[in-house]
Length: 333
Image (cartoon, rainbow, N blue to C red):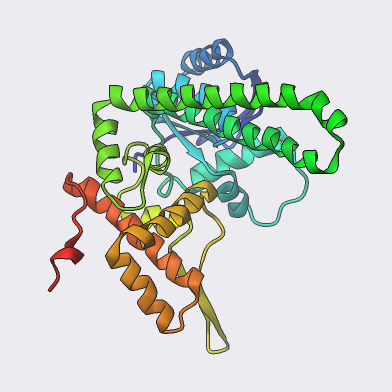
């Protein structure tokens, strides 16, 4: 890890950025700027004018989604080192604390950066195609949720008189019809974005060669792994997805069952669960495995979680080999 002389912790809010600068000098420098590109650019110029060596400076801030994306973009464009750290990681590193304010949070983030320099992994901005894919997919998720919400209106028909329900029926049908058209357009936009990126398209085809993985699951995997640049192994991605088992024991008295962590990408975990159910139907090898473990008395969810892990390792295997999944089970004697 690079040696830094200056650590800048930033607490990100919708409208403002509170910062704290920690140097070798024990005196802290704190302040607040607007969360706009103009303000961030001015802040970086001020740092340079005051003699701050930008190539020896580390910026650290919480990953707050869309609110921190502008800051990450400006830092990336200026080729500066920065790290977007999960809020929970910073919170748990602080120990027992009392009170909370943006100013205090910025100071704690700066001290966290200085203490954990050797553990912090620098962040990079995803490729433009992945950024576009992410926001279009988010729009798709909202559209799907909206369709489900408006379709629930039909449940009222059996409890209301015809005259009462007809007052909203036509409007509701038009709304659902429009939303479904929007969904088709969003799906086509997602396909177009992937086709335009040769690397993403090739990776998606490899993923879809695995029984159980379809269009939506493959797209989300590409986003979650940033085109397989964010994770170096299947085990790390299994941990991220909440399907990797961990031991729970202490001394001779505590012998807890091995279980998965609740800290996970819940959307990814759900998609892997649905993919495992599909794989059981259409992949003879996993179907035999599922039936064999169930016959041994294993719990259904335990067996399904094992299948999710197997699928994760298959995902990374086809990407690393750059070849489609091959079902060796059919060649078995």
